[in-house]
Image (cartoon, rainbow, N blue to C red; front, side, top):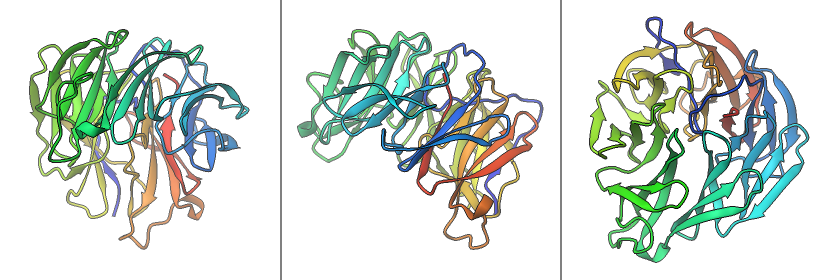
Length: 363
């Protein structure tokens, strides 16, 4: 059994998981993180460059990397830490009013948008990336039954999109934030003034490179919905025989393509990646690299990342419990694997710590 990604034709694809698409300078490292360690790695070979003990941030939460290759913006308890990926030292920190779960940098790197938990509700915080000063906040009150589920920022930096999920049968509309119980609200990225909302969809979010489409992976995993960011009209991407989608759509920082990940296709214990043309919002092909028998994509939000130039894609693999013959490099429980694009050839596989759960590249 294999994790399966099919690639057909001369299509260049690339992926940015966490950070808003923008014009990127050449970058030399990526980062993988878990609860016990942080490692930088070479996107040319996959070799680990530097591994540091991780007692500075929660590696299970989605972090962001500045374009200096070094500064990591990382959640840790109720703090947001700016951490040196070279030395592991804290460069700056700020205590927040909630526990941060995801950090997204604006395309110019000047602003960090932080999704934080606040009881059963949630907060969206605007943070100055240079000083870590909080310049704006929006709170979803827990007693009304809904919670903030995900965030995305437009490439222009003008709007921030928030998905809201109702957690009970008795949710009430938010009176001081997103005035719906479940759906997506659009806010001005600087003032957090409400600009619009839709109740048609909610889920994990990914913004297209041109800012015209917001891709929404529902919590139940299928189908993929597309929100027109101008009209907020919703359409669906049809994928034949698709199973449960894994994580958000992975979008290229360098071309109009992305990857849709799903499980439960024709091969047991497999993950399939479909190539999405984000100009037409149509699936154009599949991509199949060679990986260990029975390995599958780790089902986390930040388990796949394309290098900024779009020449390689990196993913975290784990052996499926139903595949006893699966062996990852060095007998590791998890592995970092990289593949060239468009060739789809394996760059390398490296064993990583058992709790490694996130990959990020500089924006």
